Image: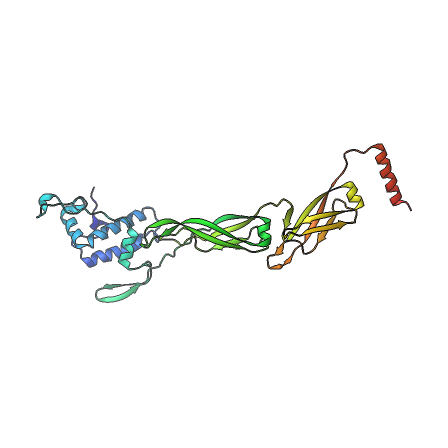
Length: 317
């Protein structure tokens, strides 16, 4: 069934060019998808744009008025032309926003505009619909403890949709984002790249957010700006003293003497040997040594007697 472009624009067939423009202006603003969220408004907006595209063009309008939509889109039969050829077939480009922008002359047709009616000029403020930004796109950024200790540069390739120069079509393009990791950054640190998400004609690109995720380390466990190191020692070492050798993240080899009797909750704190402080990387947290004491599974009778004698000597007056 052929569509009636005049009916779509709520016009009769005696409508003038001014009537057609006025009708399209009123209805396109009413049914634009950015403003009208009701079901079916997008389809109505499409039909309005196609109807205006035809009726605002003198040649297309004349063909449509005489031969209808079938003649317009299928071409005029041979006997209807003086040259004996078929007329070119009309096909709507299918981009109603393009028609809309061409009519209003810009990308912000909801701003103030002027109409002329009955010889009087007046301004009509149409409440615009602001573009909404897409929700942030969050991605993990796995970093080693060494990366977070020294700082580093990370380059990450992303693929995103970008608008072409025509403002209507888009394509997928790659981009390299550079992240300068600062010494002392902690788990959960967020790095925001503003509006680097997919582009679109009716939206503000999303921010891309990278979130620091700390990889496990084979020697150290991190607590904020402190580093924890656990040493396995024998019961003999715990009672008689020993030294711990620790290779730090800045490649120092620390030899730490332990002369105290070590119990399960004992800790040895070395100030200034931990992680850089995020707010001042020249300052560092602590290196905290904890100990896992290995007890013998069995003791001979002689060994037990010797231990008893040693402990009795320790506590004798």
